[in-house]
Image (cartoon, rainbow, N blue to C red):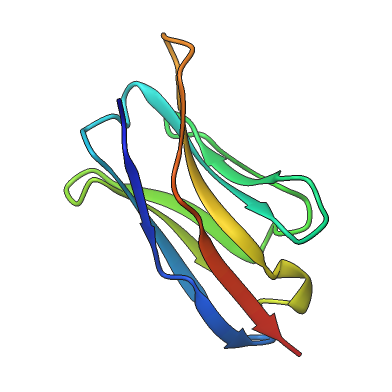
Amino acid sequence: QVQLVESGGGLVQAGGSLRLSCAPSGNIFNFYNMGWYRQAPGKQRELVARITSGGSTNYADSVKGRFTISRDYAKNTVYLQMNSLKPEDTAVYYCNAAGVLVRTNYWGQGTQVTVSS
């Protein structure tokens, strides 16, 4: 069982920045693809950014050029740096760990990001 602990959400004005952090309960980066998803009220959960076990990254079109996903092995933490935030980025953001060799899927508890106009 993998636990994911998120932090870093909050309220920010449009154009501002936030950095989300996700700390898994073990050293899993070599065995799991790590991702950030978000869910806005009344909408489906959507992928925001992913970093694979091999280090490749991909982003939703809506955040390309503004958000950056990264991982720090020493701190055992995945980050989502969010710049130039827009009101439409307002959502609950969830950290996800998807097993590469084993079909397992873990979710964090979610952290609220609110962008005011």
